[in-house]
Image (cartoon, rainbow, N blue to C red; front, top):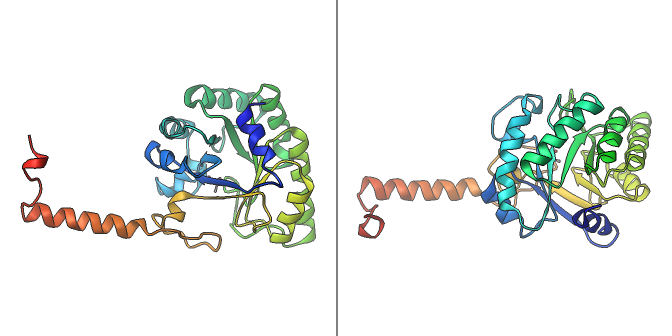
Length: 257
Ligand code: KIV
């Protein structure tokens, strides 16, 4: 196992794991100073491309963004989402995961699901491809985005899936919108770190979509905390630029050849 991955696993019960998404080099290079793990999430489908669902994201789109992100990362673990339809069976998953890794030089891939994807995950891991799992709300197959773990049968399935995924060899599990006490139970049960998004502080780490976190994406979800208002800063800068251009204050001699 790569040291960068065993280091992440070793953080469990010692220190919290910090993770954010990146879709491009410049953002990734800033986040690299603060994150343990940077995820090229297929959330880029809605955040950047305005797709109705992540199901429209293609393998090539993920690869191109990931190539850009790779250039910005020096130390963090880089994980790339396998998009919808690229891991229908073990052979296809293997072919596509190999393509993602060889083209992007990422450290690991992430895919969504529990029992249904266990065979696929085993095949990838057997072929030395590190896998991060994703349980709870699964945007690639979701019909709604309500939190998971409300009723006993749903809780049992998610807990069972977390154990199956651990046995299959995943190095971490994202828990998306999983009810707090269930996230706590999973985190206590599995030996690999859980990374929560809308799944309480009981998880071993947290991930947010960076564009949500900096106030560039206008999503109104309970699990998002806005740490910055980048929209305002871009507005202010664009307004100043506009004023300078229309009043011929820019460019000056200093900015001209
Ligand atoms: O696609 C994504 O950005 C994700 C995170 C929200 C975990 O899967």
